[in-house]
Amino acid sequence: MSTLSALQNRDINYHLHPYTNAVKHQQIGPRVIERGEGIYVFDDQGNKYIEGMAGLWSVAVGFNEQRLVDAATRQMAKLPFYHTFSHKTHTPSVELAEKLVQLTDGRMRTAFFTNSGSEANDTVIKMVWYYNNALGRSQKKKIIARNKGYHGVTVASASLTGLAPNHRGFDLPLPQMKHISCPHFYREGKEGETEEAFATRMAEELETLILKEGPDTVAAFIGEPVMGAGGVVVPPETYWEKMQAVCRKYDVLVVADEVITGFGRLGTMFGSQKFGIEPDIMVLSKQITSSYMPLAAVLLGEKVHAVIAKYSGELGTFGHGYTASGHPVSTAVALENIRIIEENDLVGNAARAGRILQSSLRVLSDHPLVGEVRGTGLIAAVELVSDKAGRRPFEPVGKAGAAVFERAHERGLIVRGIGDSIAFCPPLIITEEQVKDMVGRFVDTLEDVSKQLA
Image (cartoon, one colour):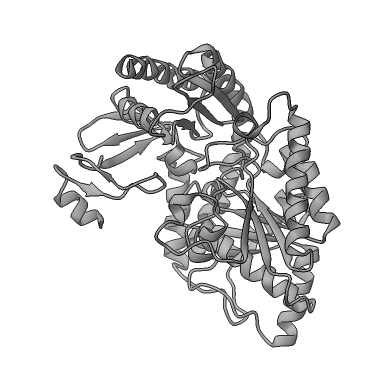
């Protein structure tokens, strides 16, 4: 339903809720968000909320950063648009590409810009196929992702996404995309199994699938350093080390989807740094502009870049791109956004405020409704269960999560219910006192819902 029709039917609004298990037919109207201020947003009724999800995991610098408005205004006045086709470019996109390469300590070689994370991962698929065609490996095209992983909603990127609601009704996933288990130790670990043993089993599953499909047919493995939309799943110890070892053994490219974890979210500039990932390809979006402007980037390591550059020279062109690839206003805003992150040490703040967030939420571990508290840096989730000892979820799944999501608004808090896991991902500018306030509102919400469910 369009925004217009949603507003026209705000009293009885039958609408689709993205990323939920079903279409919600509820007699509710949309909450119309009018303005933002720091970590807060305000609706058209004057209600003030802590935006505990930074919008969609993305607004690093808060909701009214004037420097980003000014950067966009200056660029609009100077060069509001130009493309990056036909051997042309412009200063903001060049400077941003150089900055991103520098931020990776030179591990990445070059950048390709798109408008969204979905487009970026779609581009990754095409680049991986292009790369293997250049090497004469016409069968090496399959890409392995994880159940509950999220990589986008285009036809190709949604096929990488390991969430059933993004497949149902769309004839997805495409056959070249394969999936292995979600590395969620709380849910997937066996009785008596250590985290390291679990990680070993996950790596063995990856190797088994590669051998089953044929190493000459498997091109890449893609994963988020920390899974976001699938429930904020933090990998077990040694997981990435073991998964990468399998990939290197069979010449399978490693793709780090840093759409959520990039630019400080985990207390490091990139999630790859935190978990020792050495990707061949890295995908960035969301916090690259704090979502003030649409932008994403695919970063290529030298191994992949050199092959693609040589092959495109042989073919006469690299036949891929978008009208707004590297849009000058978006890239100008990204450069200013990154300056703010660096000047204000928001990566360090994510680490410091993140410690308060993690410790404050873990106090809830003994709560009868709480099965697991997980997270790192400024991203976390609290999973609710109907039976704590048996780790049994609610029936139907999402019952408690939906109740918390709605009730939290009454407490002036916006969180996200992923099934019965309640996700937190506040702006990187959040102070330690604001973290405590956010968690306090959630605790009160949880008590409200406990009484309601009882």
